[in-house]
Image (tube, rainbow, N blue to C red; front, top):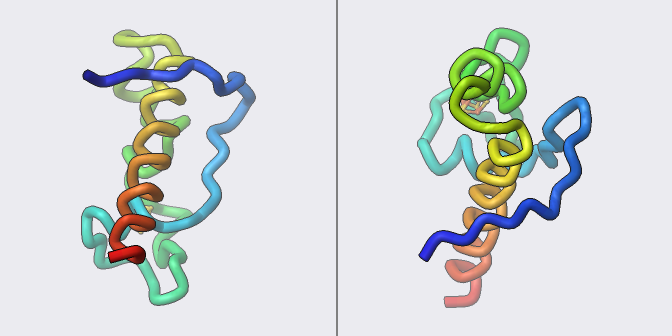
Length: 87
Ligand code: SF4
């Protein structure tokens, strides 16, 4: 069962911590060795959580839900990484 926490406050901007795990997860060729996007200024709109929301999802869900989905994805990727490291 998928549970979504709405514990995150809505602020002006999605708080990306720059871990690079989402980019790694899709094996993006633009991710550098030090987890930076080599095309950051011109990255695809879908890579920008706030822009992606405005362009593709604002008619489908609230921003609060959109942020919660994205933060959950971040948490899941970090948990998977931790599991891998502990094997
Ligand atoms: S283009 Fe940049 S932000 Fe988008 S997935 Fe690739 S590395 Fe990440």
